[in-house]
Length: 290
Image 1 (cartoon, rainbow, N blue to C red):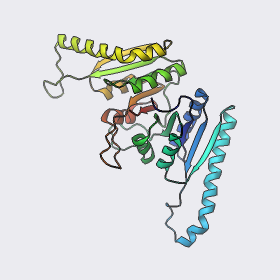
Image 2 (cartoon, rainbow, N blue to C red):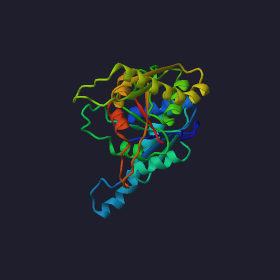
Image 3 (cartoon, rainbow, N blue to C red):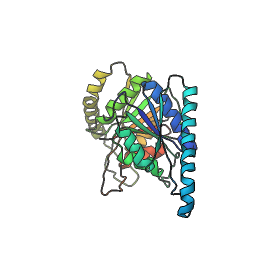
Image 4 (cartoon, helix red, strand yellow):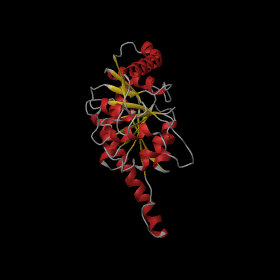
């Protein structure tokens, strides 16, 4: 996996409720890892449509206000979590660019907020969270406004064929938290009629045996490296995103791989499955780059 195991936890901060929930999650994660929490707060005068003369007078005051907000937040975290090392940083460039730069400097994980569940996928991820998910080179966790349903729940990982990156990260997180790991693999069968899946029993048994065997081989190195992690393997017939979301009702963390397809500079395609899991899973979702 990318990122240093003991590297900093980087989190983006703004004034929204989503960002505050993500900040608290990131602070707990930094304590759990024994890592530094680096808080990035982007500030800008671009939102103010003012004459240049007024901008010149206001820019320093606006920057000071942003720095005060950032430092006050950092101090609040230090008081509430003794032993937590906090490094606030005022981001001078755009939020996405700044967080990616901070994460690239040896971070173990990058954390942002998520707007919430959206059953019909009619609202996209926020521009910052969408940007970092699309381009981050370290594991990125999106925390929903509700936080984690159960902090002592299992870690859930969706595992596609030939995709070891999420497996290693998921085992590490389960071991770190002292919780079981729930491994989900799904498979599909051609539909005989729209909305109806008829799978001959022999074919279903054959496919499930094949998927289980391939999955066991993929999990084997991580099982050896983390022998204390209890593992529950689920091989399910149906769409992958549905299987992962259904398995994550009580999860403390969901882990998926990013299947990126950068067709142009502004592309944010991470694949259908991680995209839908990000919107629908009730727990924080970690997206692991390949």
